[in-house]
Amino acid sequence: MTTASAGQVAAKCFGVLGDPVAHSRSPAMHAAAFAALGLPHRYLAFHVAPERLAEAVRGARALGFGGLNLTVPHKQAALALCDDLGPEARRIGAVNTLVFAGGAIVGHNTDGRGFAAAVRELSSNHVLKKAMVLGSGGAARAVVDAIAGELLGPGGHVLWVSRDPAALAAELPAGGPVVAAGWDAVGGGAAVDLLVNCTTVGMAHGPTDYPVPTTALVAGLAPGARVVDIVYPRPAGGLLDLAEAAGALVQDGLEMLLWQGVFAEALWLGRSLGPEVVAAMRAALR
Image 1 (cartoon, helix red, strand yellow):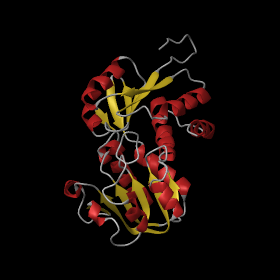
Image 2 (cartoon, one colour):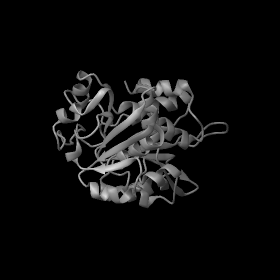
Image 3 (cartoon, one colour):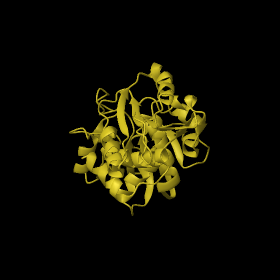
């Protein structure tokens, strides 16, 4: 990192910590944003194993990083490393963005807002009655929070599917719009008009199959349903291909990645990003 002369901005380093992380397109996206803003900053991807997360975060703070993103599997573990939390991170129970402010580590979550913005781009006039979210990690928690708080229509509900529904149910308020369920609930009840995969199925070096056949997921969709797989790039022959063939509107994880990145960078820079910057970030993901 370099020191700025009078009137110049000092170059700072930013990055994303994950395991795996080689597939991440965040470096290209944020590099495009910094270039569009005329800033000398750099953004890098760092492979960090779970047992090294604490020292990696504290080391980045000590080195003067401007901030960090967190991806699988660090979003929940990072909570314990934060000196303070933004309201979304506190409510969701997961962190995807760290801001280093005056020596403190402040954790935020921009995944939920990013997901909501991405889904609205897919279809903005869709009245959501029943959503199904697969997985129980940090991204799933943000997605469920966004659906319940921003996207659900009157009387709608969210079926949150995981391998341990009892543990999820213990966290949820009774009588709320979110209901925990096991994989045996897939295909039962009313048809789903929003299905979101938040598992690692289809991710590089991740599992290739769900606990139920992918055809069972698609068979439970309502006509004109939306299907979002937050994994990227889109796996050939996977959930999105089958859902699209069945008439669903589909979207992979690049749009959510874009918008969570827009909101994260706004936190780091203390300013909103204009449409030309968002356009540059989007182009870098293609």
